[in-house]
Length: 381
Image 1 (spheres, helix red, strand yellow):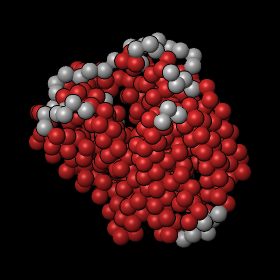
Image 2 (cartoon, helix red, strand yellow; image 1 turned 90 degrees about the vertical axis):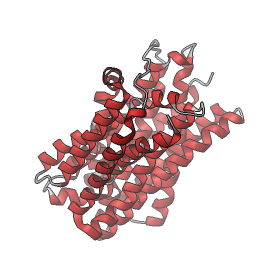
Image 3 (cartoon, one colour; image 1 turned 30 degrees about the vertical axis):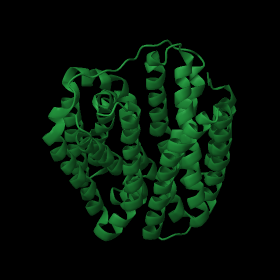
């Protein structure tokens, strides 16, 4: 494989992230357009997380049976069918069904990344994996940032068609070079369960679910607190984009710096504390104000601190086995726990913010406080 052969894969991952979080700032418009509740639309947004929960542990088996090339093409085809279909959906039920098809592309596209990284030139598999995940987050950020602007310029259908068009390009590009990807797929779910892993899995569950929830309800809450719909959609998209940009920066920089300084334990506790403080403040100010400047800073900080904490907690799962190469069960279940939170919390707790913000704020404080209290007990060696 050549380095250039990775570009179509990365573009596919970008389009998946873009198609996913294009919807986040459009929640009020989708609820109005399909005559459905905000909670129902939030569930549709969270279906990508549900797809990872349902398919995440079997995607590796599918990759082994279908080969890397075929599973990536299957991912691209499902993305096209789902994103094109949801753009022409005439009801919430049909939109939800086709969103489910698009979401299935997410775990299938990520499943063979490890094998592709091993086959990539330069002998830097961690760099390839990191770049792949980073591109996915970049797609989420751009989708969140541009979703409302596309809606203002082209309407709801036009915004949905934009993501569909990108998915068609991704399929065409991937089809042209997919024969160069490795046929073999390597993944291990070996490893034994240790009770201590539950703390890590909870951190993944809590941090990811709150981050996605805040991004998903930003437009709705800004409109509830006094902004006009178009204005709320644009600012809500920008807030979500800032959260994902913060996530990329925090995960890429803080864990490496703390590890180099030998301060991983301090890093997990401090980022856990800052995640708790930032999530609590963000919950309060998003529930009761429309101060976009303050909210922008809080969204970015939650992304940076939360994802640094999330990344270190994930790495910590490998410390529960003697051989990190046998930590497949722990890391796979960490991903499942993370996406379970993304599936459940935004649709339930996010809808509560609109109707009963005080109770929702109390839940945010409790969830983030429990994650912080777990941080001193996460394994570091």
